[in-house]
Length: 171
Image 1 (cartoon, rainbow, N blue to C red):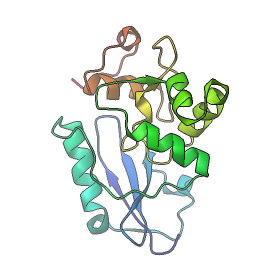
Image 2 (tube, rainbow, N blue to C red):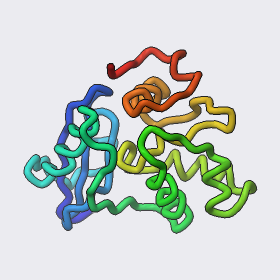
Image 3 (cartoon, rainbow, N blue to C red):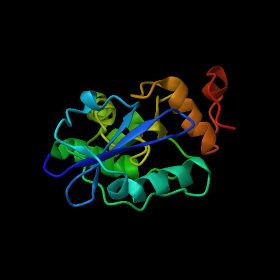
Image 4 (cartoon, rainbow, N blue to C red):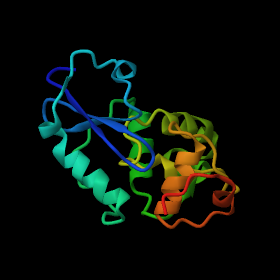
């Protein structure tokens, strides 16, 4: 990726590595701080270019932001892009099932493909894939782990019976 820059944002769920492209668009949020895992060997650490992303993430974790106002450019197939647009529209503190997302993008037959697309989301939290749950409201699959998914939903005030079963709480 030409002229990409990255930086780390400390958060209650651990460090988040953010990556912006040469046009300043957010292209990746990575749980952890292992730059090698991103395949971003040519990118340089540049906090100044990632300042707005860091500010908005900090506001989100401080419960001062319920929507992100960032230019994003997630890389993915047309189907993945369609799923991510639907996921981005899930309001703060609410959840939708994989089946509901599937109904919006092509019918129940694509529910499994929706799950795969959701799992491939390169910009978690900002494109809130943590708000997608199982048909019965259970927490299933999340790149940052189910404890992080539960913590993000608790932060947003989501009401799910399964939230009480997982340990991480952001207060």
